Image (spheres, rainbow, N blue to C red):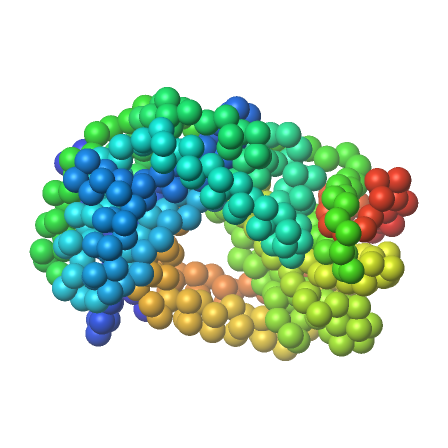
Length: 424
């Protein structure tokens, strides 16, 4: 596996170098410690919108076409992404072509024009992106779940914002947010793959010149729940998409890897408990999955499935039964070993490509206090015991900890009945 080296540039921005022996590609990733959790209510969606605007033209490259054409000529991949706690920009190219890619990436992040006409035009694009998510319940149900968990707070709002906030943004909003949240104090650069000396020199020169910024931290999540909670969104579909979650732990918690294995045992594979009970034995769902989400200040585990609109109650009961079982019975050694092998195998496959390895280190840089190589995770994973799984399951599988999100032909009047089902 890969080992990393951290360099501190002249402006104190971290540069992480992760060479890969024998790699044919190289990736540059710029991670920014900002996202929708760093926004006020009026700014909701601004982090994501700003990500789009960086591709709309700079003083040196005045249009989207010029930027994209120069990147396309390099024959690689490039994109950006925004989450609740970070924003990333990356370019992946063949070995030897990174110098030009770094120049374009640096130009986009320092020389963007933020033209009012481009902002107005892009509003329509982003609203259609929002419509796309809301028309796909499988994707949107997690947004509804986080709204149920965190309410009208930055943690509970959709990363993309609302149609109202998207339409309201002006050029001054982008300039203000950019100046505050982007700069040497909140950015990390990662180079991974077939890195040359010239690549290191270019990255140090380009990103070492970024100015420092004031950077405003996010509003911390306050975890407090006394009773189960339900949130439903009516949509005239043939299927109900659901997510049934319990609150857990933030990133860096001592039981984070235990949670990972617990989620895999519950619904992380075709041999997992919920896949067998919900799909194979009951025939209630095509897709079944369990996901363990960890933010810097909160976390949750959720079981998600798409079920017939008249079988939601039956599916909820099956999920709750599996939650009860894993919190009352010791997981057999063979089942735990299988989960460890699955997580380990997926980690190896995930870290075969330069962009995935860059993402591994970039995410850690903006969400954790230290960088960890994959080998260290593997060692900790192997030490988790069945007793650990049972201990953690008992601590999180509590009735007052339950949160249910549903999208489908569900009337608001049914919320009370759904609440009565949430018992452990």
